[in-house]
Image 1: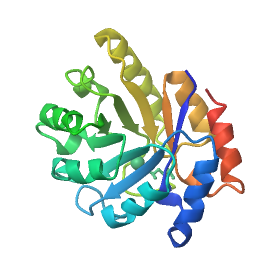
Image 2: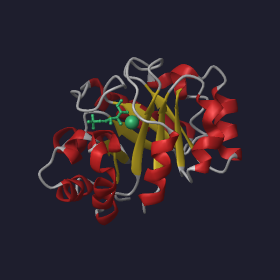
Image 3: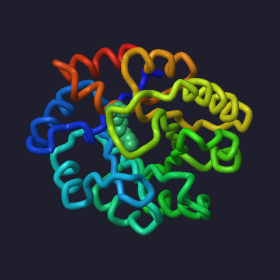
Image 4: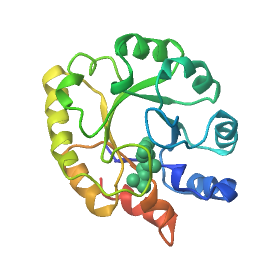
Length: 217
Ligand code: DX5
Ligand code: ZN
């Protein structure tokens, strides 16, 4: 299967967001990754639903929504109203993760569970058969443009083994610090999808960078 590329609009030019979404529409990007932050779970605030409504209107690609917020279950209806395809919630903020995953499915979206760099893959054992995707963070969430944490590659291998062992078809996505170098190591380790913010939007030609990332798989 070809590698899925999900550019993150966190690194887009918010003054000209429509132009940047146009670039993604024209490109080989598979999804558009939307990072929602609350200043509580992560030490930063990004954008909320009033902005995302316009992203959803302009985007011709499915939205891969990543909630870096406490109590993400409060916003399932809002995320669904955007027409989002995938809703990512963090393992670290969901004591009733199974319930949240079921609620996302009942709302008609594909559930994904995200783990922080210090959260081990082993905690996912009892959820991997209920989700569409696991998102492994390659940086501590909160900011774009951070350096990749090398241990993430090994975690992707561990997760691939766990999915095989459990007979799970869940996809493995990696988010944070992805560029052509780290991306190629992640694909080799078993990643199915790559999020890239800084690598895409700081490139002289974002469309060509997306093409090169796509070529990794
Ligand atoms: C980090 C966000 C990422 C971020 C990735 O908190 O979840 O999606 O935009 O950015 P880069 O690719 O710049 O590391
Ligand atoms: Zn993200």
